[in-house]
Image 1 (cartoon, rainbow, N blue to C red):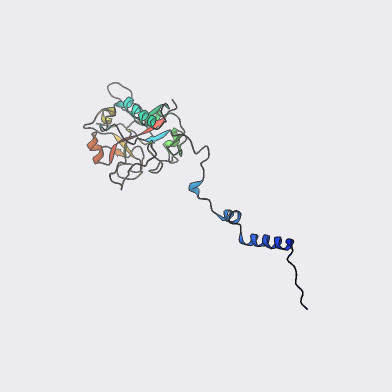
Image 2: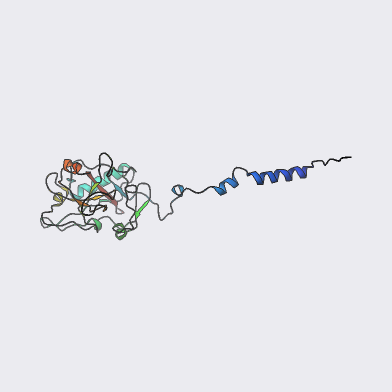
Length: 240
C-alpha cells in the first residue's frame, strides 16, 4: 500500500525559496552581473565644475578684427552671459605683439590660474602649465562652445578648425620679421596671425597644436574661411 506525503506550508516555502535562488528575481542577481558603462559614471568633484572655458560659437564676423583685446574679451563675456555664465572675468586667449611702443601680451598671462572646465563640466586643465602640456584634455570632443556644441574640424563641411590665438605653443606671443598679428586684432585686411587647430589635425608647422599650428593667410573673414577658419577664438574665466 502506497502512502502519500502532504505538502506542508513549511515544505512549500522551502521549495519557493529554492526556485527563487535558482532562477533569480530579475533585480538583485541581474544587477550584480551588469557591467557599468564608463560613459555613465559620474565625474568626481575634481573632474567636474562650472563652465570656465569654451570656444566661441561665433566670432564678431569681421575676420581678425576683434576690436583688440578689449573687444575680444567683451565678446567672450557676451557669449557667456547669454548662457547664464557672465560675470566670471572672461578673457580671450589671444596674444599681442610689441607695437607702437606698447608691450607685448602673452595669452597665457591673461587667462587666470585655472582649473578650467568645458560646458559639459569636464576638466580641461588644472593650471596654466598643464594647459600648455600634453596632459591637457584638449580635443575636438572636449573643446566645446559656450552652448555645448562641437565645432567643425578637418573633414567636416565647412572646416572651421583654425582658431585665432597669436601665440606660440607655450602661450607666449608669436613674433617674427613682418609678422603683424593682424594689427593686434584690429585688422580685417592683409597680414597674418597665428592660429591653432582645435581638432588637433591638419597642416602647418605644428599641425596637432591647439594654439599654434600655423599662420593665417590673411586677416579678412574671407581669408580665414578660405583656409579652414571662421574667426573663432578661445575664452577662459579668470575668476572675476
